[in-house]
Length: 178
Image (cartoon, rainbow, N blue to C red; front, side, top):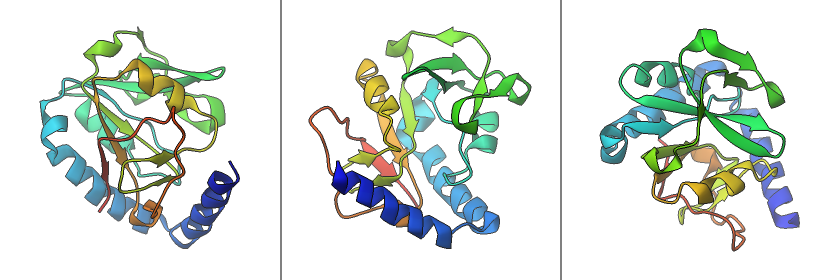
C-alpha cells in the first residue's frame, strides 16, 4: 500500500511539469488518434469511456465525436461503485462526485454488450498493470465486464517500470500513450 502511495506522489510531481493546457491538449489529441485507429476500437459498437478531469488525457471532444456512431457509456460514481449510463450529449451532463461531469441518461447494465473500455489511471506499466486514484472503483467494475477489450490511456510520464499489483487487479490488454 505504501509503494502505491509513493508512486501516486511521484506521478503527481511529474504532472505539475505538464500543467499547460496547450501541452495537455496536443498530447491528448495524439493519444486519442492512436486510440481511434485501434482495430478493436474501430470494431466496437458499445464503448465505455470516461469524462476526463483536468489532469487526465482530455476525452471531452472524443466522447462527443464518437457518440454519433457508437453507443458511448460513461461511469457515474454512486457510493463506492460506478454505475454506467448512456452518454446522450453534453447538455445531459451534471457535475457529480469529485467534480466529474457525469451523464444523467439511462442506466446501462448489459455489461456483456460492452466491446471496448478506455480506462484512466495515475500510472501504468508495460505489463498492463494500472494504478488508480486509490478508491477501487475500476477494481470493482472491471470484473463485471470480462470480455471487453481494456485499453488504459495516459501521458508518457505516467508509464512507470512497475505498478504494484494485487491479485484482484485487472490488467489492461494494452496501454496507449504517444
